[in-house]
Length: 351
Image (spheres, rainbow, N blue to C red):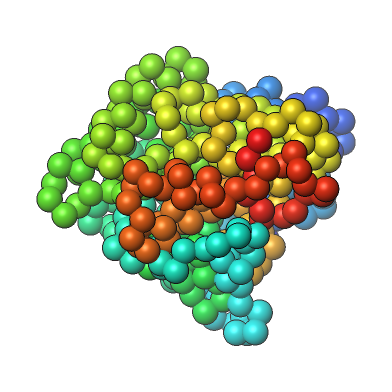
């Protein structure tokens, strides 16, 4: 749980939505206790371009844009590390064992570099970040935990949790600010940086993880940059559709590996209608543990499952699978949702 301070008159909601029932209002200066970060229920709830909402200890929600974190980043980091130190080994989580894949590559991600374009990654034990080639395109404000959770799913390797590719090397490219939003210029600059890095001998980035979205007008500018990365053998994994059925704009930016999710309650609908053609695979939306075993340090929706697939692909590559064969190998592990009798957590589906 993290203490924070309200910075303006802020409505209290029963759900993370501007249309949800109003339960009261916090005044500027009020203190609140945050237990989790979630996305708004629909694109209309990405208020003022900021998609994230906070779940409070009392079970209500507030929009994250009206809140200032009251705890220094280093204090939050220390808490994460302490949680990892005191946890017992018999409570440890191996994300590989959560997966309901027919087969899982033996690789551990060794020798594979994954660029995480997100809100930044905190310097905590158990996440191997190459700081030499990481880059901050924000350069101000505190680091939002979202990027750390993404990185943990991909490559955590601590006493209490092991990510999909525990030996993968992660590049931290911070393009999302502390409120959970980004400007398109930052994302374009980050992609340009990776294109140049790919031309440096021995410094190629093998996977780009984008657990985020963009404005529709940016698609035409993003497309050629993604293609330039793909032409060098870099695989781009992106969030495709969230649990409320909203397609992302980033999924329209080329032939990406797009990951979607659906809510358990929508199982019969997706079973009947399938997924959009641009979605490479989809999962039932369940939270994925990250960083440690504390409930607040988990991530779901398309953000979490995009990271999961990036980690899975890193395992493939370190097992010797060629980049051009990754899509075909991934497809072999997908199950047709139309033939399922019930929805199964952590199981990858295709239409």
